[in-house]
Length: 340
Image 1 (cartoon, rainbow, N blue to C red):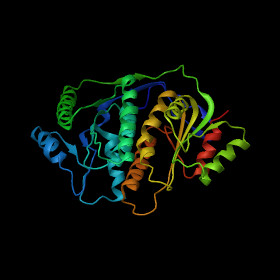
Image 2: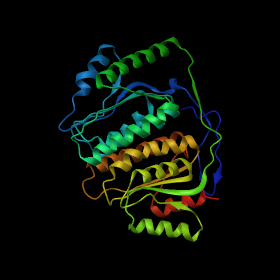
Image 3: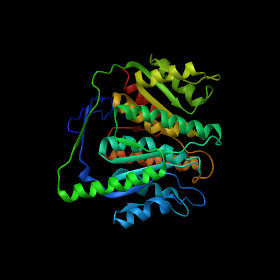
């Protein structure tokens, strides 16, 4: 995979960042397949067989179908490989499930499409009957990603899953024609160079004021004289949300901690978009994810496993783009390194 043509990797202590200001990608390096990611319902979603696969097979367009009868954590590496290398990727998030794993993958897929030159299509179905947490995760993802799309249109939103199926077939055929023509194709995207960040650390993720890890992290920052922002409030208001948004855009270091205290679906859905925003703005982004107690194949643990594997694949191709910490103490050290 080609790297950005102008790579700037300023070193801060032991950790290097990958923060170029111009991205140049070569889609011809990608695998000529359509990755059919998105909702895998129980007992089985049929949108792949009903809408996508027949049309792709009719035109001899290769595809990857990640849906299996029984998912295991070992399968996450194979999914991450295809999400990192398939030329065309679709992520429909239908209402037949809460779609936590698909939402968690979505942000990382957008970041990958920006860096690799992939063609990415997304459909998110609304459902007012869902629990508040599930509905909020979809709304959060859709709002944040649409804001990013306005400035960096590297992915396509479709209004219906049928529209997405048509987009996938047309896009795959177009890519096939370009490959056969031997046209040399590259894509360049310029990122902002004039953003000023305030010398602070933001602590996002699992929300709880009394969490022992949070108190220890803030104590470490206090002892080092490092200013930080903790967004947690028991009575959260719209104004708090606006303040939180400012810190996400302005603070020099963005941390996200997903612990086993809650299922953290909202934080998982936001993780890739937060990493994408930090990359665009040149901020340092670090993430720690621990498993949720219980079944490793549960929705939340599946999403956590997939996110970890997608980050590992990104870091293989673009070393230093995301800091995936081994522990909260490790993440605290990372933050201190990047605050002058």
